[in-house]
Image (tube, rainbow, N blue to C red; front, side, top):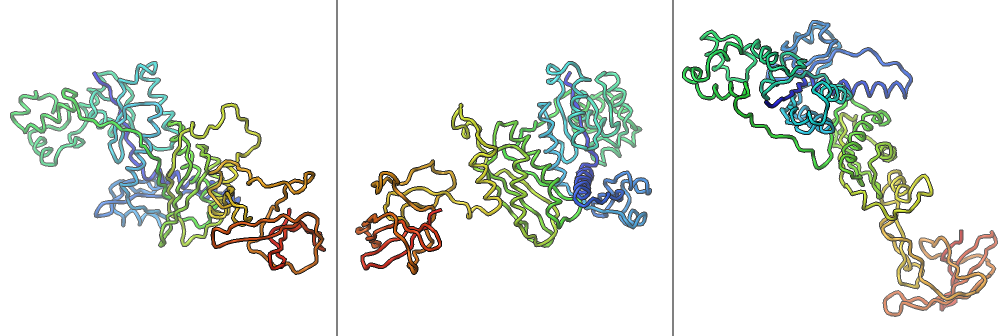
Amino acid sequence: MTLWLYLHFPAIQLDKLKIAEQAQKSDETELDGIPSESPQPCIIVGGRDNRVMQLDQAAQQLGISAGMGLAAAAARSRNLVVHPYDEADERRTIREIAQWLYLITADIALFAPQGLLLKVSGMLAMYRDISHYLSTLCSHLDTQSFTYRFAFGHSPEAARLLAKQHGALATQDPEALEKALHGLSLAVLSLPAKQLERLQRVGFKTVGDLFALPLVELGKRFDCELVQYVSRLRGKVPHPVTFYQPEPEFERYLPLFYDIENLDWLNKPLLKLLVQQEQFLRLRNRHARQLILTLYQRDAEPLRLEVGRAEGTDRADLWLNLCNLKLSSVSLNGPVQAIGLKVAQICQLDELMDDLFAERRGTMTPAGLVAVLQAKLGERAVQGLKACDDLRPELATEYCMPLSVPGTPLPEAPVLYPDMGYLRPAFLLPSIQPLQHKINVHLGPERICTGWWDAYEVERDYFVVQDSQGRWLWVFRDRQQRWFCHGVFS
């Protein structure tokens, strides 16, 4: 008989907010040295009448309970923190938890927004026994700091009901599971209200009363839908389940516990997302080349930042440094309420390996240096340079993407002096400047006469000179005997 395990997360949205609150307060304590204050009571309200759906321990101590109205709950404390229920956020979070559990267990079904169903029977060949599987699962899940309830069952619906009602039922004994299932009230079954009312009218109070009646008699007195539900609950017929498949792309959204105006305080929440990204990439043996970091601002459009690294990496610490450099030049239009992270470009590891025997000679690769400079100065401020087949100095090179072209030597030219070689300045002036001071000529002339086939014909005699200030210059004389400065030697 197939064995199932159901995990129920009753306060998944509240837990996520508490995790973000603790991370932000610890970050503030490190930055400012101010001890964090005691946590304020917090509740999640939803529905048309704004009833309490989730609450923390501080709110419980004030006498607030689930189902209480917002007005009654607010009257208990003036410091009560209220958040609206967000089902979409819980659905995103339950998928993230499934992604985390996929490291140690294979068959997972999503029961959004607050439940996960695990098929245990197929995993027992990998683990010693059921207790070893459960302890591994719980220790792995506890690192996420979410409160949860669990229970085993011989049908998906039975495991779901037992997890929500018992909280921690760690047994696979068929008699114990059947006894626990018999003791449940009919009100917990996933049946229409009219169906439950009909069952209660004929004297059914518990699930055991419902199981005591044969299915044939149950079909005669009630409809076939009730017979199908009871059969699935008892494991007599298969329960249709769609198993979770890992997401092909990484995209996460993290709401913050309160608004942030100091970008330094985004360090901890951002690192959490980057660690999740690192786990995502390592499972697939992939590296990320470009990330999209989105800052959701209050009363302003989201701020979208692109952070790139040409060689790619999966390490969270390296991406955090690049993101911090990018954020150092950002001006906010409003407080940040949430952050989002998406991997825009993914590459395989074999695309990045140039030579099996190549040794890293420094602490930073060329692509890593380019990524740091682009994050600090902007992508347009960092350019590559490649040689062109043109003898005119201003057209001999052109800009390109950094590291897109391997190192190319400049076009060869005749050697002027065998002992000194072919001299070219390190820097060309943005525009040619007239020469207006005295100079001493040391090398030259070197004649460049070309470009007659287009509209930019040049005929120049170049010299290496030194001015009165000791600077080494590259100057030329045109056919009108005018002198100009074109470059400066470093």
